[in-house]
Amino acid sequence: MGTSDPVQVQNKHPRSIAHSGVFYIAIVWFLFHLICLLVTLAIFALYIFEPENSYLKNYRPHVVILSSVAASLVTFIIAYIKRRSARCPLCKGTPLVNTWARPHSNAFSIPPLNHGYTAMLSITLTQKFCCMYCGTRFDLLKPTGQRRRRSSTVLDD
Image (cartoon, rainbow, N blue to C red; front, side, top):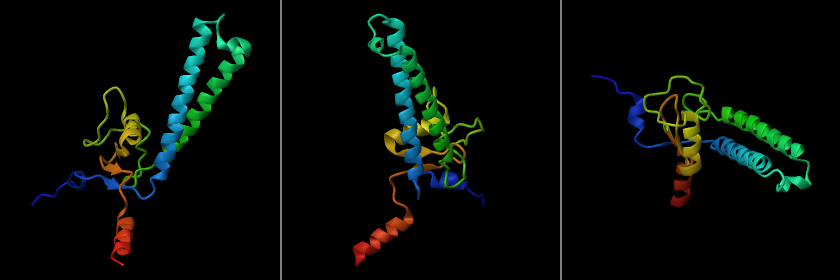
């Protein structure tokens, strides 16, 4: 009698996460970083392509450019720290940061992106992600077993 891989057996339904707030905070900081990057790129485009007609003419353009780059750098550092603090409940890996370790055979990624960015995109759009280290799928909106039992006892009373 052969034993089956527990990840493959349980992989049919996503698992719940007890403390999903860490993942939400990491995603919010990452999205804030992306917004800062877009603003920085827009300021560069205005400065390079329309230097005489620019909206930056009333301000000091170098100060605006340096402050947008600094804001992008600060939000990147904070987002990276927050993504590193989001850990998989089963394997204790960091599924939102790609460490170039070998991914699990059940882990998936969108081809131009790595596993970490795929997990962040998946959390942003579907509230679900797959850990690249253990291959387990998680649902951030699914209540934990303790919350399900608590809500069922309230309904029974």
